[in-house]
Each structure stands twice: as C-alpha cells, then as structure tokens.
Amino acid sequence: METEMIIPAAVDAIKLQELEKVPSKTVFISARLLARQFLGQDNEGLLCLSEYANFLRYLRLTTSLSLLADGQSGFGNALNTYYTAGELARSGADQMILNDQTFPAHSRQAQPPVSILDFVGKLKAAQDGLKTSSTELIVKLDGIQYYGIAGIEERLKIAAKLEAQAVVIGHLSPNLFLKLQNKISLKNIGLAQDNSLIPKTELAQAQPAFVIATNEAIENQKNEAMRFISYMEEKQNAKI
Image (tube, rainbow, N blue to C red; front, side):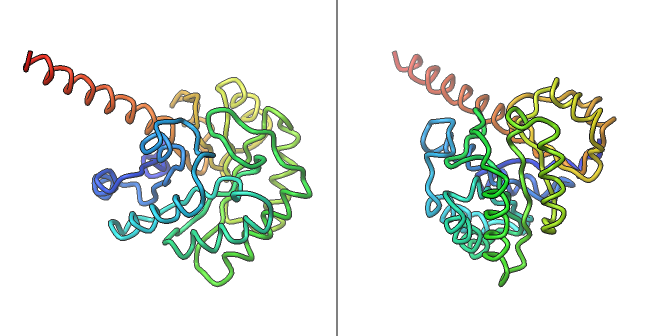
C-alpha cells in the first residue's frame, strides 16, 4: 500500500513536526489519543467540544500539515453537530470526521449507531455548519457490528447522495474486513484501524482510498509511557 495513503494520528506538536518530514500530508487529531494523554483514560467521550477545539487551535499554530479533526458523533444531537462543525472549522480543521454512533462516541467499544433518519439529519447539520468554510466533511461508519454489510451499503448511498467528501469505515476486525472486501469495492472508501490491525498484505490487495492508523499511534503512546516509567524507576533506584 502506498505510504501517502496512510493517515497517521497524533496529538502533539513534536510528532507533527516529525510527520512534516514524511510523505503523509494529512494527520488525524484523534480525540481518543488526547483523552489517553491528558485524562489517562481510553475514552474520547470524556472530552467536551471546547477542550478538543482549544487543543486543535494550538496544534494549528504549529504545523502546515492538513489537520483531520475528530468530530466524533457531533457531541450530541443535530444542533450540537451543527455547532461542532462550525467550531472545528474555526479552530483550523481542514477536514472533519463525523461518525454515526450515538453520543458519546467510543473508539475502543463501539456505541450503537443512530437511526438512518438521525444519520441524515446530523450529516446535513454538519454540512450547514461548514458552509462558510473550506473544511471538508468525511463520514465515518462505525456500526458494522450492528447493521452489517447491508447497512454499510445503505449508508454509503446516503453519503454519496448528500455529497460527503469521503467515507471511512471503522471498527473492522480482520474477519469483518474480509467479509466487507468480498462484498464492496474499497477503492473509494477509507478504513479506520481503531483497534484490530488488518494485515498489510490484505490492505494492499483491497486498495482502500486511505487508512487512518489510530491503532499504531495508540501502541506508540503505550510504548513511550512504558519507556518513561522505566526511566523514572532507574533514576529512583540510582538514588537508593
């Protein structure tokens, strides 16, 4: 799979500066990573919109990379989604992801999806909130465990009809990925690796439009935390 089709996830300026040296031009500012880093909990639903938007504004000042903002499930109903879209656009988002989970969203354990009616309402609300900006809207379908591949196909048609700039499918286990690949062409669809890692050989064969590599960033964050703990323990033992 082409390197530039991998969208890395990050939540700090140092990492963004490192990414400016590689082919990737877009970075996903993951609310999940942010919650893990600042709250110590793997649950982005604990963040409020103002916290996330303030942090996004800070990162916008540090990089020229294209920032993909985590709009989660719109932080509430359709009206909340409208304000979320506008706030993230003002905070410097070049693109915004909106998922179809019920609020609050959760990347590690998928929430049930909203109904088709609510899905359409939130999508339209987000588009209205972005009308005065150049921020693009990406729709993320997170409910494959609930509505299956038939539900994916139905929501893909809706997203296309409402002219979403792109669609991402999340919460895919390797088994679900193989089933999806046998039913749907992924060449114009992005994939989000929220938890389970899909083998690179299978990704290369499917040729998705792009892959958002949140899982890899989570593992790197864990490793960095373990290295820091080991360093502090060594330092403490040296004093004894």
